[in-house]
Amino acid sequence: MENGREIVSRDMAEMTSNIGEKIRRLSGSSLLVTGGAGFLGYYLINFLVHANESLAEKCRVVCVDNFIRGVPRWLKEFAGKKKVELVVENVNRLDAAALGDLDYIIHAASIASPTFYRKHPIETMDANVIGLRNLLDYSAAQEEKRRPVKSFLFFSSSEIYGDPPPDHIPTPETFRGLVSCTGPRACYDESKRYGETLCVNFFRAKKTPVKIARPFNNYGPGMRLHDGRVIADFCKNILHGEEIRMFSDGSPTRTFCYVSDAMTGYLLLLLSNHDGESFNVGVEKPEISIKDFADLVARTAEKQLGLPRVKITTQKNPDDKYLVDNPERRCPDIKKARELLGYDPKVGLEEGLRRTLVWYRDNMEETA
Image (cartoon, rainbow, N blue to C red; front, side, top):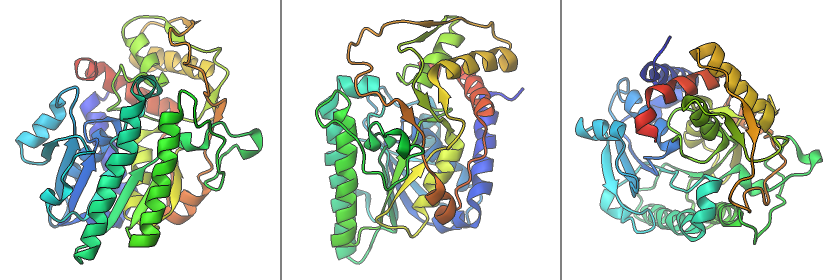
């Protein structure tokens, strides 16, 4: 069986194949990744380091993060080999101009786990708004200097849709949302919505080549076991030999997109010419209930890793606002990304769970 490192290497190779010739556009360029120590940052930076092995001229990779949990071991290794430049800074205060001319900006810095953004609502809004504005101002200044940024990718969220009614499932980019502006999730949902408005108006007024990605329940290697999202919680329970604890009746449904497929979509968007547009990135099926998903994780761990089958229980979360404004269904319409970007997710749910569980098993200490 593959180990965790081999799984990541295979994912990088598959992503390179899926992106194809477009990858050459990165040759000799300078890229800034904010939130590089996070879940999505893990695959973004691993991919860019992998891509540099085949590009005609290596690209410069700058990783900005506040590293509140310390610098991860994998990132220390890249920095030690001078494959990545580390900048320890809050993106809200980042002096991007000091980094010189940047060709690509990928703004992935955010608190994306509901467990944590409910605990830190103001910090969540600051990263989604002030940090974004800081980077957009840099991009506009570069345009005025005639040294324009080639592409700017903003990570929004499927949460901007709120809780869509059944007739808007799967949810297309044209759905305007059904969102509370004062509920416990509003700090994240509304700041992402404002962020999209900010991006679109910078594109219209200042020609900033910004693209907007709306992730739908991405999962896979790189997500911390204590992230607080359902996939990490279930894997943590299993790997610790505990029963799976659900904090709902298990009836809400989601579609789950493996990180290599999602990252392929984000990179295709970054390298496209669809400035000022938003794209859903996820998978349309299977749409699965949380209860059935818990059972699938347990069965996959037993079948693929030989781990003991664990029980699934329902408990009340100590956070009494845990389920407030929680969407009943979350499923994207990805027709636009398929047709305009050539986005074609390939990793099935059980296979994605296998890769994720193996990676967690081999990186327990790093992901704690």
